[in-house]
Image (cartoon, rainbow, N blue to C red; front, side, top):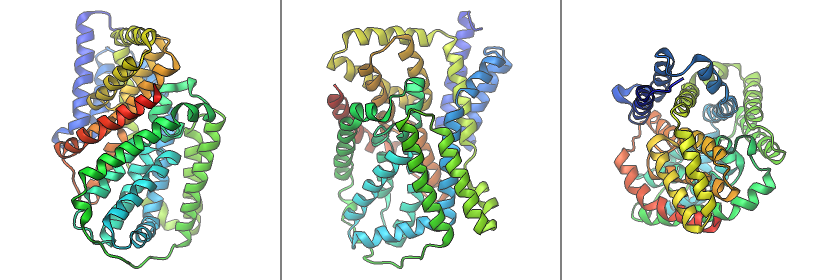
Length: 418
């Protein structure tokens, strides 16, 4: 156990270097390499006992299953041509207007995020929007790609299933669906509306571009229909699990695996390419982050945060909620919202925080990552999807938009919550 000042400093140093590696990807090594390397260093140096590390990895089983199920369905949608069909339909509905296509993407993104998670929006919607941009012959597709990224976080607290971080922050204290809606429906609406207004304003010049008014719509194959059915059933299963306060990982993974088996039963050649196309490195990335947070717990940082939460809970005023929500939002952009959510969850439990304070922390965890590309796993997945298709968005380029979009949405959501 880390009980000396030198051990504490070493744990913080390892966690900081691993986090920087995840965010900046030095030497073009993947994010998972840096997270797992940091976790390995903690264990090999004795800073974190192996049983504690194993317990930390095991604690994330629900998140792993959730992500695996979503990635299975997303890859099937890409491989079966479902994305291309949906994209062509969207272009036809836009009727030659880039503005109308932007609003369609944003609205559809809100639905996907609400009923399937922000990570699903990143991995499912982004390739479809890129396909739509090609079909519409867009010269400047960035506004529509931004719509995918920003709505993925803005709508990520509509429902408990809308963000894996929600599972992390609340844990076993996750409210049932009715209680969740009573608490977060209006703040979510405020965040979605404010994000749309500011994002549209920042992209208004690019959205004046004319686009193709009509494009050929490829027919849906049997495999694409089965994948679409799998997506619908996944949403139903998640809503049912949320309604009864059940874990969300198993239903998501079961739905993804069942969809894979159904699709590949009619076309076996899809099995291997679909499994190979999934970004499996996301899972060790998340596991490594869990271990790093377990190391930080040994430094006493969680207890200190718990005391700070207790102080805020006693004040429990509007200004306090704005303060804690803003601080948490900024912290997500320094350490990514998944580890920040893990730390916040432990601090909330240690501080016996009220429901209002816990809700303000969740808004900061979910909405704050819109500030930068480093804020959430969904945004990292969005960047991965763009790189896969030959597109790139720079850190400063995203930050310039995020600095305008995030503060109004965050303040609006916290004001409604208060």
